[in-house]
Length: 66
Image (cartoon, rainbow, N blue to C red; front, top):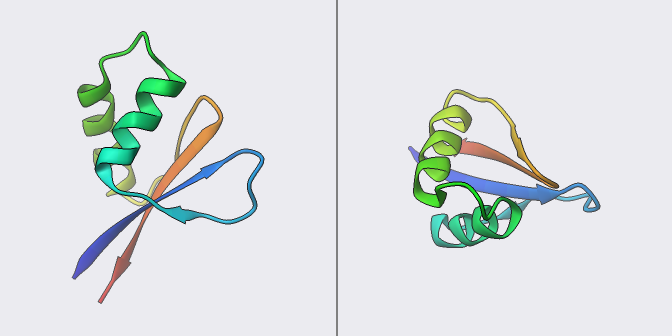
C-alpha cells in the first residue's frame, strides 16, 4: 500500500500531489518562525490518522492506495 500526500491552498479547488521536500518548503514559507522538520513530522503523523491539517492558508491530507 502506498501513501500519497496532497496539499490545497484555501484559494484552490483541487488537491495537488506534493512531495515531502515541497511540503517542507511550504511549511517554511507559511510559518517561518517554526521548526520546519518538526512541523513536517507532526503533519505527517496527523494525516496518517486520516485527519486534514491546516497550516496558515494551506491544508494537508493523505490518500492511501492499494
